[in-house]
Image 1 (cartoon, rainbow, N blue to C red):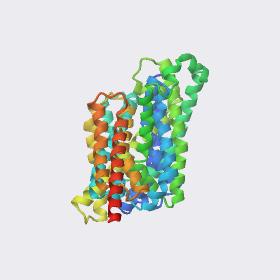
Image 2 (image 1 turned 45 degrees about the vertical axis):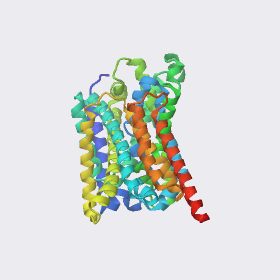
Image 3 (image 1 turned 90 degrees about the vertical axis):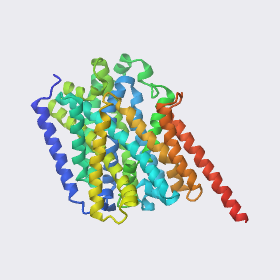
Image 4 (image 1 turned 120 degrees about the vertical axis):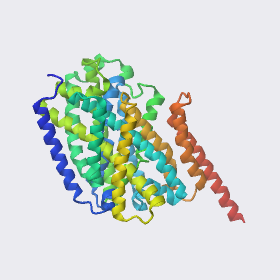
Length: 468
């Protein structure tokens, strides 16, 4: 089989995209105001919650990016989906109840209730930056997919992917990402498991892959080094627990049980997708050792899969990339509109005004993504995904834990300082300092030390007041 799209690929892909578009159009009928747009009017069942979480977590990084990293390093590529699954499990077991009962729509709202308005602004800045980096990862995945499929240059591919993201979410909101997420989940399982099983069989099973690759690095979870890969998994866990999109999904649940079950379903469904991508990446490394690693998954489909099924899979990958980018964009726009625009610019903004502001902000974010992507087209997809999750985690995770589980026990100023210095420490370690450990740990350490000092300060103040 050749490398080019055939008429069968195109017909199957178009029919798949039309079907998903019809679901998205139906989803848009539920939107009557900003509450429906942002949190589904708190009417989402467990499947909608899971569809929203999986629909944004399983995107270019989980599919194209995982195959790319497996092509280069092997099983270390599993950390994205494995860490995401663990993060969703922790979300279900420990975080869903206080989040759902807190009746706050955004992470900054939760933090402001505990630490004051400045904490909301600070967290908004760094969390939005972290989410933005993950949108970059989705666009890089889309570039790999579209350039392989249509033989176009990277910049037009980037523009096309961003345009699709704008249409995907601007007229569907959380209902669009949730309902389409269910369809997307079904399609991704067909796509990934079909491709993964074929790669497994054609590669000779476990024995065949062991004969083709050395045990290290390809069959180690720490093929790039223990601390680097452990940091990758850890960044996913704390990133999931700190990200607006996933918190927004559980808050949208019609009940606590639906919210928790949706998170548990996500934890079960996400890791197998990455495992399938790993075997596709390894198979392509054996048979196509000189290709661009980012093209491993799309090329596998074009060269090895029946065109009818291949067209469905290609469309599904495009939906995965666009859906995740759109969901993350929705998360940023929600935060900026509710915690910057409404708080500082228009406190009396009407429901219609907020809805318009959300949609306008989506377009602004995607335009900035296009500007950023021009200088990073050849980057490793998961590099940005791991950095994104880590930046969100070091900024929000420990302060959020305090706000949910230890209310009134940490000095407010210390919490705000931690939200500033922790992400700055991580960024400094990444770009300026020469440190042996992953800079994620530097950020976490700084956050822990400052929060601990805040606890001591508050405790001393409490004891002093009680004694007087």
